[in-house]
Length: 234
Image (cartoon, rainbow, N blue to C red; front, top):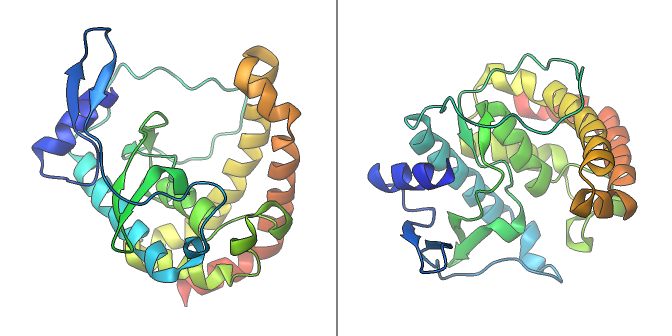
């Protein structure tokens, strides 16, 4: 699906993603290389810059607008999730990126220029894409689990700036924090299930404490959801 998605993005003139060039002699996918600045580790101080954050939201909105006309293919494999997870009542609208981490953004001249690494792309709603965006760039989570440059920030304000830059509708602003809480709850169960059934990297992440980080985030979301919603609707 990702190959077809990248071809579609090129066909509609979206320049904020790599181009798919085909396969090399070893059968490996070849993409264009996008020059620019990426936030590696240790994280740079500019990660907290609000203008950069706003440019990320604008890029994600442009990507979502371009991806919407791609539609949702019928043959997408179901995600590996435990049975009987509660329904979040969040029907998909487009193929979202869903991994909008600092590592997956290329910046030029202080602005987000391109999204890379579409391995997590999947059918989502626009508000679910914005939840993922805010997770990394507001960011959502307990200070103790964040990069030092991202601690102590005014997260309700930053969430509002992201929503405004994306152009999130009022209805979706009402839905955003309840969805964020529900998605985080599902994330704990899903990560645990994958660690137990898939092993490998999933088991390693679980052993390294990802479940604890998700639990910390759940408490943080419960404590801050009302303040963030108030800011989103102000």
